[in-house]
Image (cartoon, rainbow, N blue to C red; front, top):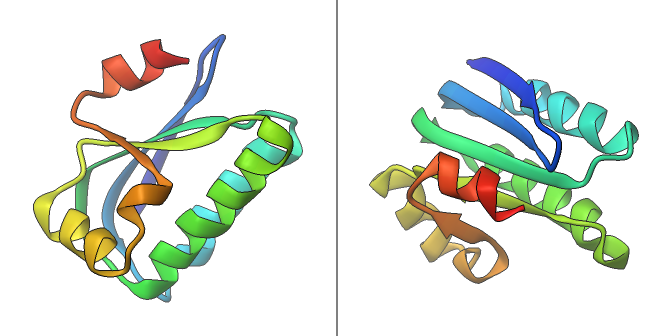
Length: 111
């Protein structure tokens, strides 16, 4: 898995590539935790290049969303979500917990 992080004036963008499974989910969690610990709570996750996401990856997304939404500080927005990952989010009942947009530029501009 590869993570490319970009910081903008209004939010942080993380582009994730590869598989997010029990081996790589902690790496994603650490990248997201680092942003939150620096006091930034508006995060855009570009999942266009993600091939697979296990329950460990979904758990990282949920925990990060909870941390960002606490006290109305921000949120995690998902962009360019592949159909197989969207189906997993939908099956788990998580689609209502995230704003999911098709365009990364639109998501960054939304903050």
